[in-house]
Amino acid sequence: MAEEPGALVQARQSAVDHLLRVGIEGFGPFKSAQQMARDLLEDGLTRDEAVRVLVRRHVAAAGIQGFATNLGGLITLPVTLPANVAAAYLVQTHLIASIAAVHGHDLESDEVRTAILVCLLGNAGTELLKKAGIKAGSKLTMNLIQRIPAQLIREVNKRVGFTLLAKYGTSRASITLAKGVPLVGGVIGGGFDAVTTRAVGGFARRFFASPPAAPEVVEGRVVEREVLDGEVLDVTEHD
Image 1 (cartoon, rainbow, N blue to C red):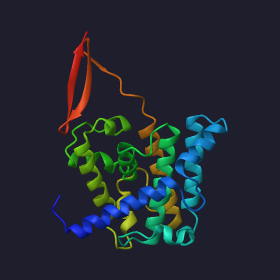
Image 2 (spheres, helix red, strand yellow; image 1 turned 30 degrees about the vertical axis):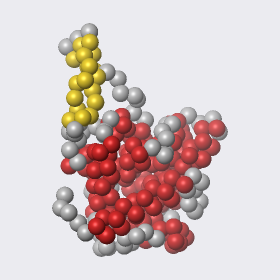
Image 3 (tube, rainbow, N blue to C red; image 1 turned 180 degrees about the vertical axis):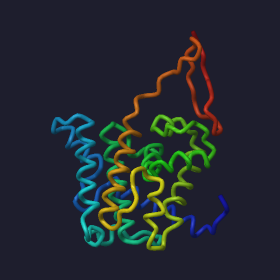
């Protein structure tokens, strides 16, 4: 990725930090992501049921005409974005964070925050990891993010911010991003935001619900793997 002016890079990072903070802490009609997850689970819902409720509520909010106007200063970011795009990002960030919390992930950890940003990209997240040097196949899960070294996490964060924010400033900005999200297209306005929010919710559900990584059996041997210098390596083998 070509070098950019430091002020622009800093502005994008500040925007991403604001997006994460507000999305996790809650805004408007939404409590904090942690509290929303806790409330649903304390009501006796299973994790799958809680996630379905979360997706339904966030899709409904994203589809309301004028929702961005009601958020006021919350959607003011250090970069120029259309109000509806910024509002959709906030709703989707809160949805992803809430799903992560339902599955017991620590919203304060760098890995989980990176995962939230990657989920905003939908299917484009896999390609982003490849560009950052992570050669780990096409299945993107929380298990993979947790195995990435800290220096590569920083590179992933930088690329996520660039991808989310760099191409905006035109009326077709949200259409550009949505190419990375499955099952969207041909919908505009609140309907578009609702469809993309549903797609992002489905992606996050699969991403965070993945079971803990189990050792792989290859020709009768148990092989455990880790990510090192951008490569997935076999680190232990035993019968």
